[in-house]
Length: 257
Image (cartoon, rainbow, N blue to C red; front, side, top):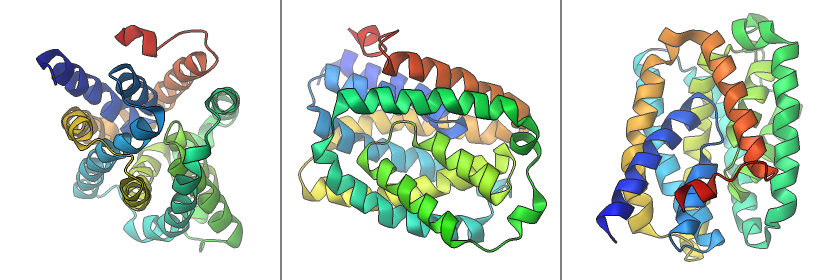
């Protein structure tokens, strides 16, 4: 591996860790770079999980230190997500990339209007929902999100944020703390599946993770300072950029070529 490749992996990792901690969609950069550097799509999908685990471990630690993480609720939501992620990881070998990219792009655009239409629910949270026990519907929703997250990581943060804010009643800052906890737990299970099927390049993954950890630390450290309104608009911008890439309007992969 050349010095230029190492620098590219670390620097891109900083941006990915920052974006994924505050919103999601940064995985597009990771997968694009991995494939440009020669990894097959399925190996890139598995390799990316190394950085995801380490960046979310960093974020979870920081959010807990700031007392922003509701660990009990996070565990309850993480369990069905983790089960779903194992199913999704096993299904990932059958991915139809072209169809998938357009479908997820459409969902992301819909979420922009969702966020703009009900800003109070995203910004303030709803205390009465936080106190409720996890329903069967929520278990199913997080199981389904887990299948998607295990299948391919791109954009899973948006689905988790929507489910946590609108279903569990947390504002965006605390929802982000729960989100990174859930992603940490389910990705551990998904990674086992990819390792078992020899779909992980440890050298690429660990070097990329260095940048991811830095970006995740900065984002989680200052999330409460910037506040929910900043995160809301940050998410909207990232969704629009990610959707443009998924629909082929811009080419994030081409930026690395």
